[in-house]
Length: 273
Image (cartoon, rainbow, N blue to C red; front, side, top):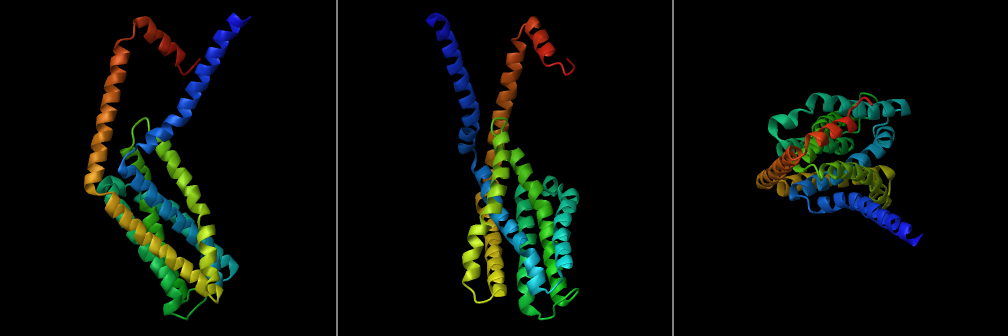
């Protein structure tokens, strides 16, 4: 009885070790990933905080400050989200034309200008209401965010593809998704103390938006400093070398297989079974 249970116990231990390795190895690989990839993650975190932080205030901004009705305020939020979707469709290829670094910097500059318009508008005009000067300035701000985000999001995903190998790509994309969710959570911690420090809700809301403008500037600095041309070139060369070595190793392993092994592999992986 004990003789039979020993192999079973060893098999279970090996299975557990295999599963544990599969779960932990991506994190280990990501921890040892390039400076360029960490630069993308940090930029994406800052932008996630800023984007979700401002989106959370947009309806209040348009109803309380620009003085639109609830329906029109909701339409402005829809204008931004739909606009970003269309912008990604038409501007997503920008990264293929000018590269990751320039795409990210241009995108963040567009969003910076848009957020400055959005935040500064109520202080430079008292004309509020539908199609008022405050409304038009705010719409210009939204257009800047739309154009910028239409370039930024595809550029980040293109960067992950460019800066990762077969081992780290899955976790690289997973990190972007996790950071996006973290960016949606953190504004709930950052914004309330700032709003409470001001006498009126409007002043507090605009103060929070100025903080997000500052985070956009910080995001530009992160890309400019961490994602230098030298860093990107070094990362791409390392990834290319590792990928080339992996392809050669896979080809060598394939060549060493016997005809029977190749046939069995084909039958096991045949799509129609």
